Length: 121
Length: 283
Image (cartoon, rainbow over all chains, first blue to last red; front, side, top):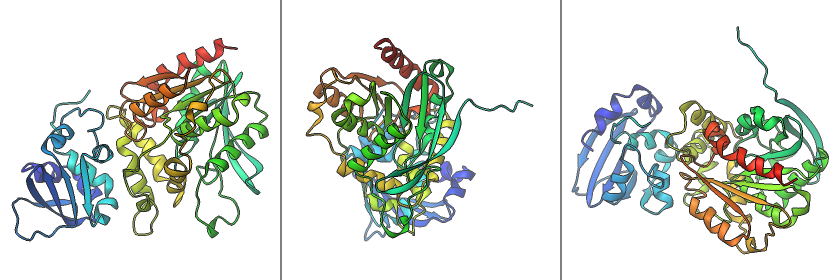
């Protein structure tokens, strides 16, 4: 997760796609929480919990195993997309979803930016 | 210069349906057994571009695809602005049978994907004698809701962007980029509320779980083809359907998702052509 800012911010097209996004969202990887702040499509900060009274717009919550499957270079069916996880009830998408849903392609690619980098054939 | 026309011809058909005049966009190519193609929710006939251009198919089949009213280049009916669009099983069946009659198709093969795959099951129940064979792509009897459909139609969320965002993961991860992004483009171009209106049929009105055992494949052969990465209609959903419908032929398509005919046409055709060969051999 510490790599997220670099991976997103060096992708100029992805930053462009998120150019109207300004929010902080929560990601839970098992029992570890992260707050990710975005400003104009760039990741401004990635903070690791635990937090006291955190403020965030929406939350993406899944087990460590579910995220590790999702972040494989070539994820298996059912783990290859945030909504694939959600359909299996392996990911909970909660909170004020307007920033997430109105920039859905952007947020899908932000979370997929952490995928292992082996070239997929 | 390498300009060329495809063998596909598009025309507009004026026909009364559902009690109103409609202007329906129809594409066709080839000659022989009519093969009527039904697109997915919120999309249009462009999804079948590869089928409409494949010489191996066109030599034996007259491939026909039409944009459902409200979709693609078909207009919504007069007065559309006065009510929400919501597709029902009855209306969808009426539209298809009106088109079969208007185009004078003699026992066509019908092939539909997603909502088209679902309505093929309804056709198998209601009109088996009118079809030579039925092909359900990504066909399930029912889908469990996994997101709030209201996000698809509200003025403060761009409809094209959110519809593409919803379906982007339904495309197989290894599908070629040009075809992946063209498939998403179709979703980006849908009218406001049209995808959501189609999903009324897909998620509620068209639930056919209680009746699929009644399908008689002796009256009309049924082929079910599903992509392994589809989480809307999963391979397990299709396997369950095939277990419950005696005589249904099932193929799980490696690497493909929810839009096999448009997301990776070459791979899809490698699965479809043996099915069409089988249908031809039954004549």
